[in-house]
Image (tube, rainbow, N blue to C red):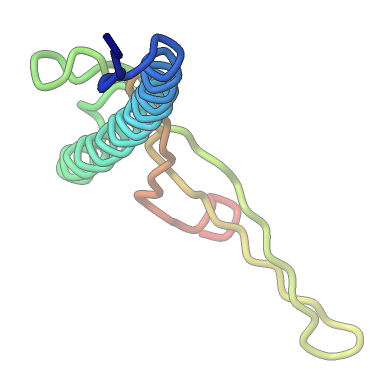
Length: 130
């Protein structure tokens, strides 16, 4: 009686399972990386939309908008802060004269989970220039 094997040996089956396991791990890792990138992009887009809404609210009535806060029921995970920066620009007109411009820049900084954006909303001349 001669028995000829027509199936896979145990070693061949183990090598095939090992290769499939490695491919599965690589695919899962890429999936998780792409999911985190997609979530970060969604958070940044949400921050931009919320900053635009807060800009509209601020330009309508700046006295009623606190300097820091959250977005309430709209998005409880997002927080904002309105920051003010002074910018001075100097330019030499002739050899011995210089013009200086002072501006105040207001911007909204919105944070949601790990994402943070800075959204400029208003540029005005400083009080010294007025």
